[in-house]
Image 1 (cartoon, rainbow, N blue to C red):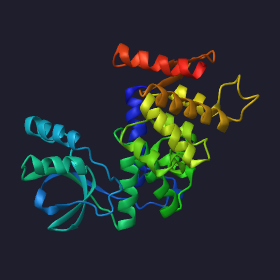
Image 2: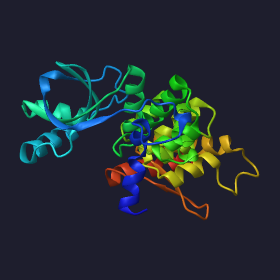
Image 3: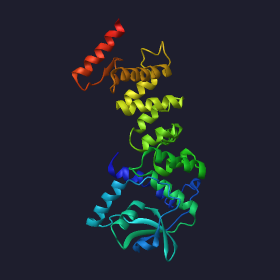
Image 4: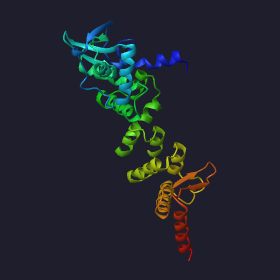
Length: 295
């Protein structure tokens, strides 16, 4: 996709909300944009219903440095409550960073938003188009648009410029155990890992595989194979059984070796076990254990 086309797609949502669409099914109020103007930071307030919950401290710190050197390049968007109060529609990170940078004013686009409902819809759509949101935050945003505003996936697709399957895949992540959702939010595993784990109905088994992904640094492909099971084994074992075999084997080898163990399967179904030993004495101790088993 070209950069020009990509920008057009990413800007689709707010345009739809702000009246740049003729689709009456979207049922959003048209609003008017006023030219950018400088407003006192003391008059600007955050949206109490802000859909975004995660603000990366490091990213804000980097933004503070940029603001001190270059100023605010892109104005934030606010709605006017009264002459002394404006509420943020989009740009809370820039607002937070500007306060830390000790600015007195900030450039703003002021939009006429008639009610809190329209404001929240605008904030939700604006947020979901950001590239720095984690998958769970995006999924929660879609869920709110569906549940709180009775928007179906077709309408959301038009608002955010994403296809229906992409939206559905995000929403399905919310079926994962909350511990795994937290792992995705914290960057311990990717959306691809999460999509693979969704196919496991047993939440306890989900957690066990999740722990193996973290400890063994499994790729999405390796995770999919653990979940689905090797094709050579499916005739004798169910997918759930194959997953349990991998987990059980890893746990037993780690107890035997008293060391971290990684089981990896290549595309031909060959499984490789790898571990490490602190010293030759530790290796010798393991060999003695194995010898005793053989007797």
